[in-house]
Image (cartoon, rainbow over all chains, first blue to last red; front, side, top):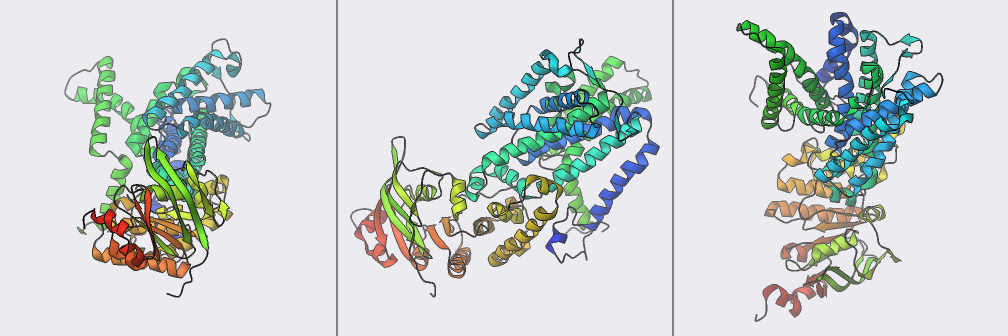
Length: 358
Length: 260
């Protein structure tokens, strides 16, 4: 009964094509965003920012990018980690090689470089699909692992192979403390989520989904598969590249190629699958699930053990964490193969009718 | 009917199509006139769907010429056929299952929408106006097909008959000059068939769209089409007015077998 669109009539197509057509939805999302900007900085301690919130924001941005490609355009990829690396290293080179390069511009240029590489590594998608494409995108991963480890120029000839940035600031406003980093990442995420939503409700998004659902019919309607697929690779890699830049610059500060290994690619793909393919919200759910759950289990298991009077060793905790985490993923995939976002939409549909059955 | 049948819009000359050693189409020639309803009939495996695929560029015939408005068509991709104004529906519904009815029909407007990626990303100016303007056109199609009540439903959840109608809607949203219908009435009950016949005739009548249609229901074909071409084993065995075709001995032989 609380959640009703009763009496909310639309008199123009503009009104009907808004992002949130139901007023309650709009208010709820605006409230969440306002709370994230204003409330959380006062409520949360430094550890939470560093261990959970900042990684969550950045990985949610990357997952959003992967979702545009895998969920909306149906092109599976195992190279997301590589595009994060390209974004990070390209932004690094722009940042240190050009004097006075603003941070945001460097990050966006990193994203653009990643988009360019995305188009290049997306070319196989014109011929192969499914698992074969996944293997082809792995090439991007291995190529980047190799390039950033072996080609000294990318790392500015640093002897240890790791690179670092410092003195981050945006127009005089320094980004040093966890709260500032958090707000910086949050701004990026909100803006990019809006862009992703706009793209998916526009022509380009419909072209991607058409290619995903039935490529022959899409072609007959006048959609060029090459444009649709490569634009999906480009936009997705742009998102992932910017996230990679943030991960290196803001979260890590100094990093080496291992930060963007194939594990990261798998992690992002899992986020998208668990969160919900083809759903913006699903990317957030997936990122939250994968970032928060291990940490939660890590804290929760010893507490549970001491409650029953059993002391659980650190090693046992880390083993149990993996076991429980794995089985939860399997459980969610069996219960709801369309991801957490589908559970959310089912709940909303039920709420609209509650307490009546129809 | 008030509409006037015009000149030849599509002329197929000596089309042959082979898949390896299998001859799908052999030396087929026929033409389609502007504003007419042209039916292609024939037993299973006669090459009817292959013929449609040749017309809209999915298959490339090894021999023969296709003239569209008097101009010879070179080897072409399906999307170029769409640019020329040829749209089609599919025998096994090929809708975009994850998308709503509205979005499915909106994809039919893709070629007419011009705004670039950046404008779409920011949802500003031209991109936004274009979206509204084409939404209006799509709503006209939705009204025409009487599917207003399901416009926000994902097509995967719709019953078969409605899916067929959405498939037609998507093709109509392109405002085609030639509409290819591959068994638009297969698997429907009598009422659904009547509805579909009405839509097809209305499209032909109101918009002057040329229609090329494959159908198995002889009653329907004889009623709504102006001319009929009959294929059997990839060869043309009859061509003409419905009544002529019905009395053609070759056609009777193909449909009923020898000895009758």
